[in-house]
Length: 94
Image 1 (tube, one colour):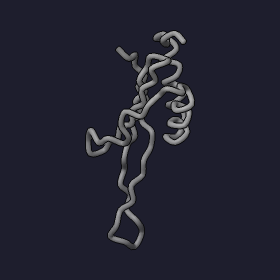
Image 2 (cartoon, rainbow, N blue to C red):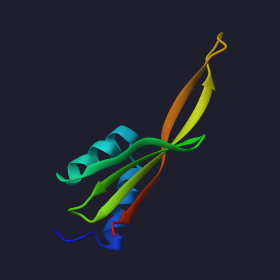
Image 3 (tube, rainbow, N blue to C red):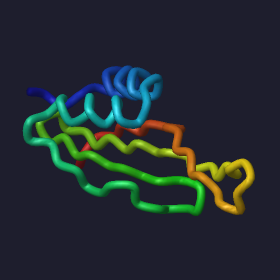
Image 4 (spheres, rainbow, N blue to C red):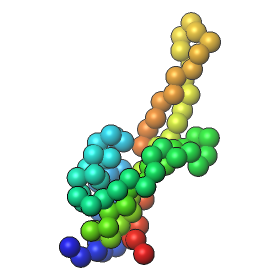
């Protein structure tokens, strides 16, 4: 299969951005049988987690960026982390 064009990469990024993290991750894994997980929920900043997949057959790398927000639990001194997919980056592999 030929590498994805710029328009195809942008279309894929828009489609994945509309999904939840789990659904986007599942879709990316199904795109390429030879794909591999480069890193999972790597912390690049205190409020963001990065997950990256490399899809060699398609010639792209897909990075899913999740935002982390702490919410207070009622009547408790504890906090709960809430994760939400913020951004999807689809770039060509070199």
